[in-house]
Length: 384
Image 1 (tube, rainbow, N blue to C red):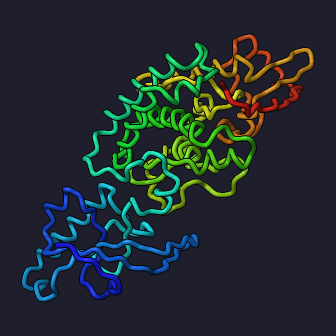
Image 2 (image 1 turned 135 degrees about the vertical axis):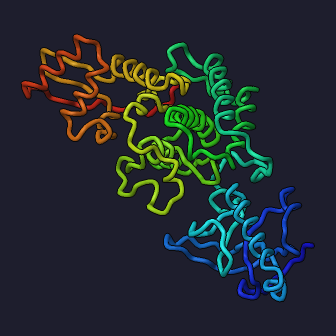
Image 3 (image 1 turned 90 degrees about the vertical axis):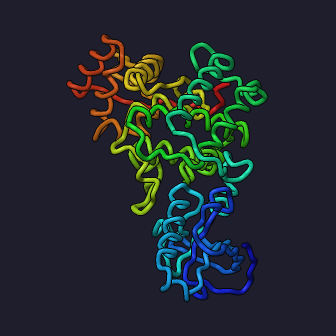
């Protein structure tokens, strides 16, 4: 039984909750479901204001609360089940779902989801999500095909124009819609590393196809920070994946804040510590970036070491023994805290992936404090 209201307050009802009007409602134990359109401004600690909050309410007549208390418990349990599968959430992420004067919002109606997320062309899916490892496997298989067909053999050049109109990319767009309500928190480290590296790299291609190649710093910030996917009921930008998940929630370069705050549920997805070698695997479409390749959970550590060797041995670090100068990629400067406490430690870390002769020369210069380090100009032009 569905009705529409325009002027009720949440305190008029004994139980307030958002629900999804999908097939799962059929098993709802409450007596009736009402939709309430409540025009009210609601402001949280970050000054986010939403002028319209869509609320759905379970209504159980108060005289039945005491006669049949199990109805209330069943209603709350059902609401928590829907919330735990990412159909809705508390507007301030303060609880999963509780009885009382609380505000909840459908994921579809979240303003960030509706305006910035690009894997929800038809809204939030109500299909029961497949296991994340199954989706990750299908994405890897598809990514291998895209790399084989539309990138150069060395992974340094990408045919964006052909990808855009390809059947493989159309299939990719369909698969990433399945990420909206999957559970990723408990993925093993190796699975999580491979999945989010591959997702970042394909998502970057998607962002470039939608927004175009960024012409300057402001456009780059938009591409890295404003182009998002819904994954596991939360929104993730390229920056959030790199700095929040793969770097263990570290501050991005030139930023004062960590990606995930203390109460941000996305922090539960983050790896426990930074993975420095991911910087030789993440590709945001620039010529000075690493080669594009697909990563597998079974060999992720070996593949990341191979990526580091490939990047650093092919111009990432150039050692001139005569001039006693090391020319290094700015990636090692921007993310230096992931490699060591100071410049010497960073270069010692990087030396592990150089050719033996270059590694020995670099370590000798570092030991004698004779090395001058300069950082290469970063080429932001498109890797096409």
